[in-house]
Image 1 (cartoon, rainbow, N blue to C red):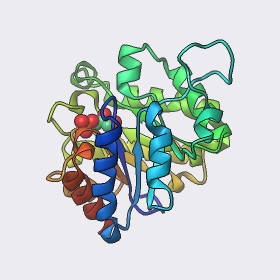
Image 2 (cartoon, rainbow, N blue to C red; image 1 turned 30 degrees about the vertical axis):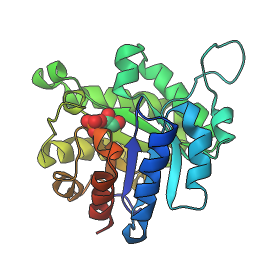
Image 3 (cartoon, rainbow, N blue to C red; image 1 turned 120 degrees about the horizontal axis):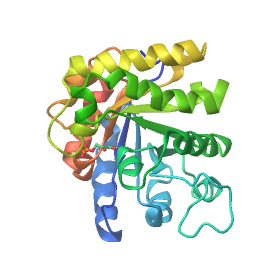
Image 4 (cartoon, protein in one colour; image 1 turned 90 degrees about the vertical axis):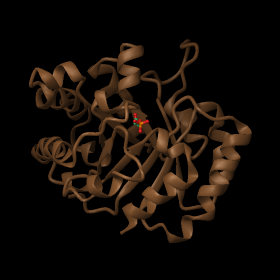
Length: 250
Ligand code: 13P
């Protein structure tokens, strides 16, 4: 179990527009007085400036969805950690399965991205998770351990400053959720791996992600090593997101 309060992060992915973002955030902020967990939203980069303004002084932290592994220079389309810093970004997702899958991101690249974020004072949310084929082949533990090991190797004692998100690929956007037992089993493996690498592993929040919603959040969050959630679709609906934030505040 992490020593911190639960952390609930909305990953907006490639959704939203200026008007919809303003309306969603206004509705969420209106319900925040009864929320006691840590909360963040990871938004498309072009909206970081808008969200920085909308979230100023609120209890919701700002996050990005990716960061370049490069520091600066001729890397068309990339966004550096120092650029994210300019917008008071607190968290940055790295190694989301959609980036690993559609942009061929490797474990080594993800580890470098985590390093760039940490060096800029941004907490990387390192995503790990197995595909359905890997689960069915009994490789779940080996896959998530390999993915996390790359980040531990590259980041040494800073590892206690990261957040980890276990997102089984087969559960993302599919409506299929890992059972609370399946989630806990993998989270315990990740916790043990972090403990072996750092004396301060209990500072690391391990989030679950993959079709988490207002109905299943409570039983997932009740698991001893589930320290919060990384939420896609359900974070785009203010009532659902707020309901999950309240569940995580208990
Ligand atoms: P869904 O909650 O839409 O399944 O997405 C999970 C996810 O990928 C969060 O990063």
